[in-house]
Structures are given as structure tokens and as C-alpha cells.
Length: 240
Image 1 (tube, one colour):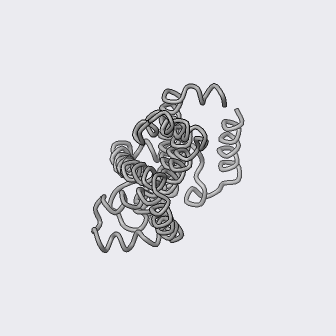
Image 2 (tube, rainbow, N blue to C red):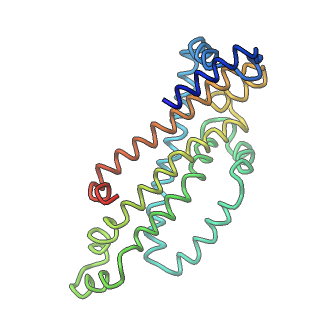
Image 3 (cartoon, rainbow, N blue to C red):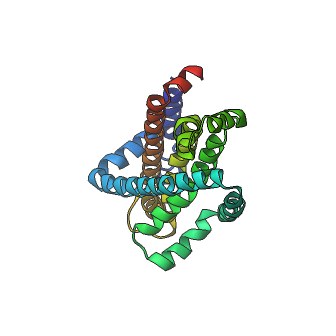
């Protein structure tokens, strides 16, 4: 109800005070802009969506094995973590122009930026979860002749699931941001490109519409990850 009230107040204020549409469009102006660009918007949304998903899946594919590796080997942890921290300390918007030089204006640079922003929370949270079982439990498993594979399968991985999904929920929203950053720097399609193009022509309602679609995409993807988490970790949901 509060959200609806804010929308109504926004709509009424825009019409009462005569705020120019190019400065601050009303919600109805945004809806009209979305309707006018219907099929075109679907294409831009699809481009940003699959850039986000590919970057996210790539972050999982590389982040989880590396999390296992740094958990298993302290020497590897001391080697890899500083490198990861260095890459994370550089703003991703600074990487984007370099990636465009290397890979051109296709979709791949945007996928890489989405991967870079999603990778860090996945590897850190997964590694934290893999290390969460107490040393006493691990020692007991070893005394019972459990192999490393059995320890990971029966103890570490189940314990890591809540941490893993926490990382995924952060990573999926960051993947959307990463894809948009890549599109801001250089693209010919996608919602990020649409925001830049529409604002450069003072088509502010369309820019707001693209931002609404980006917000909806992030919310839906976050909700999907949360639903998978509830299915995979039912005990965790009951405890929290």
C-alpha cells in the first residue's frame, strides 16, 4: 500500500506542478513509453538477461571449484585470495573499456563483467561454508576412515549450502549490474544501452522504463535463487 501511495503521489505531483516530462516523467508516462516500445524492449531485456545469466553461471562454474581448492590447501589459499582481492579492488567500470578493446562490441565483454562482479561473493561465501564444520567433526570422520571425498560430500558440502546460497543471492543481483556496466561502456543493444541512448535524446520516460525492467529482473532472479535455496536447504529455512 505504501508503494502504491508513493506512485499516486508521484503521478499527482507531476501533473499538479507541471514538471517537464524530460526532467521527471510520471508513472503513466513511463508506462506509455514501455507500451510504445513493446517488442523492442523485449529484445533489449532478453540481451541483458542472458548476459547476466551467462556471467552468473560462469562465476559458479569457476568459483565453486576454486573455493574447494582454497579450502583444501592453505598454500593455495594464500596464493589465490590476494589475487582475487586485487581484481576486486579495481572498479569493474574500469575493466569494461579494456575488455571492449580485447573482445570487441559483442556480448562477451558484458558477460565477462557480469562474471567479475559475481565471482567474488560466490568464492568467498562458499569457502566460508566449506570451512564451517568444526575441526572435531572433521577429525572424527578421519578417525572413522572417511576419505576426503566422503568428508566433502557428507560434511563440508551440506554445511556450506546456506553460505553458498547467500553468495548466490548477492551474486545474481551483482550480475545484472555487471551486464549493465558493460552495456554502458559499449553496446548496441540491451537495457543498459537503452538507458544511455534514451537519456542522450532526452527520452527520460523510456530511460525510467528500462530501469524499472532492470529492477524487476533483479527481483525475479533473486526470488528464483531464494526459492531454490528453500528447496535445497529446507532445514535452514525452518531454523531462520
